[in-house]
Image (cartoon, rainbow, N blue to C red; front, side, top):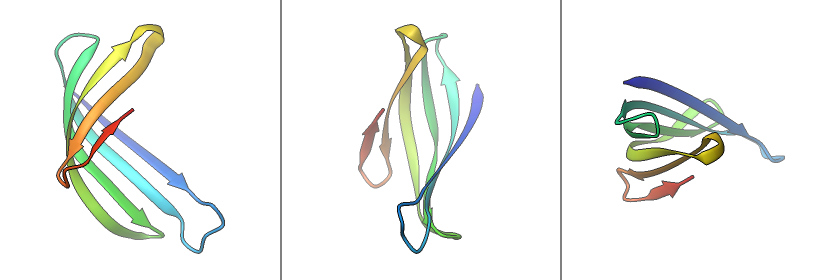
Length: 80
């Protein structure tokens, strides 16, 4: 079991800075694959605009490239 937190901030000559935070907890099946659950929090400036629950799967590819797929509570998905 492990805990992971990521934060991304982007700005492109706008009034407010967009940001996204992802907090997950992973359950490892082996060293290559894990199941994770957590929160995806998005906002603008200092405010929180949206929070979604996520459930997904991570797999470690050759050359230590991490791949992941998740579904969120709004019915959307992400592959990265």
